[in-house]
Image (cartoon, rainbow, N blue to C red; front, side, top):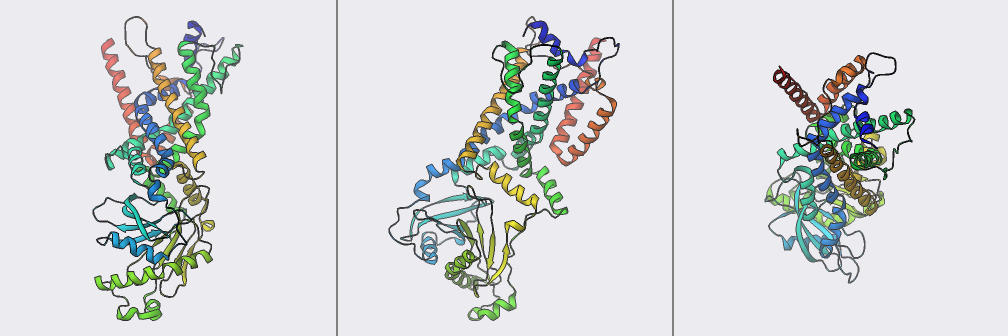
Length: 482
C-alpha cells in the first residue's frame, strides 16, 4: 500500500461524499479515538494479564509433572480403609486438625488429606499425601482454593490475579478484564469497516481474516493486527466475561444480580437436626456438645464413618474424584462433592449423616439454574481444566496471539510517528470525533456507557478519567495556540 493510500485511510472519518459539503457522520472517528487511547493506556495491563494467563493456562499440566511424586504412588496391594489413611496423616501432623479428604480415585494415585492450618493464608490448607495401599505419607505441602492448587500453580494463579500484591493488586486484573471486550469489539468494528470501505473504492478486495504478506511497513503491521484480532474476538470476550466474574467490584455486582434473579449456585446443606442426631446415637453423652473433648470424639467417629459415607455417595451417583468434608461437630453432615476435572461437566454433591448413614441433602448439577451451569463451565474452561490438555493448549495459543496483537498495536503507534522532527511517537486520532458521529448514536453510547460504567466500576472510572484528561489536554492546547 502506498503512502498516499495510507494517508487516505487515516482520513476516512473526515471524508465527504461526492457532491456533499458536510462531513459524513458515522462512528469510526469516535471508536478510533477510544480504541487508540484505551489501547495505549490499558494495553500494558493486558500484556501482563496475557503473559501470566498463558502460564496459568498450562499450570494444571505443570502441576502434574512437578508434583508427580506427591500425586502418584506405586501400588503394592488393594487400598486400605480411608480411616486408616487419614489416621496415618494425622500422625504426620498431630498439631493440626483434619478437615477434609480427597480419596484416591484410581490405582496409582495418592489420597490427599487436608488440614486446617492457622498459620496459612485465606483459602489455604495443609495437605498430606498418603499411599492408599500402605497408608504411608509420601509428602506434604500447601494447597489453595477449591481446586486444591499446589504451590507452583498457586504462585502462577496469584501472579495472574493480583501480581502478588494482595487485594490492591486485583485492580490491575479487573481493569484489564473490564477493557478487554471494549478494545476487542472496537478493533473488530474498525477492521471490518476498513475492509468494506476499501471494497467500495474498487480496489483489490482486502483480506479480513488473513495477513496481507505483500504489504510492507505499517500496512503489514496493521494487516496482522486486524486479521489476528478477528480470530481472537470470541476468545477475548470469553476471557473478559469469566475474568470479571472473579473480580472484586464487578464480581460483587454479578453476584448480586445472580442472587436477585435466582441464578446463584445452589449450596449443599450440611446442617443436621439436633434432635434426630441425638436420637440416632446420643454419642455417649456428648450429643450436642461442642467443647474440645466432644469435638475430638465426634471427629474420630466421623473418620470411622467416611468409608460408609463414600459408599452411600457412590450409590447416589456421586463418585470419581471427590472431596469429603470431615466435620468435628455433632450437627454437621459429611458432604461429598465431585471436584472439577477434565471432561467432567457435572459436579454433583450429597450430604450424609455420619451416625445413621442417611442422605440428608442432594445437590444435583442438573437442577442448577442455567446461569450457574454456564458460570461453572466458564470458570473451569478459564482455568484450563474443562477439556484438559487440549483446552490448555488453546488458551496458551490465545495468550500468545493476544501478545502479538498488543505488541503490534504499539508498533503501529511507533510506525505512525512523523519522520521529520516533532514527536517521537505517533499522533493520536484527530480531536472532535464525537462531532462526526450521529447525535442519536452519541446519546445512545453515552447512556450505555453510564449503565455499563456503573456495573463495571473500573471501566466507568477509567473512561471518565480518559475524558477528563482529553478535555484538559484540549483546553491546554487551545490556550497554547492563542
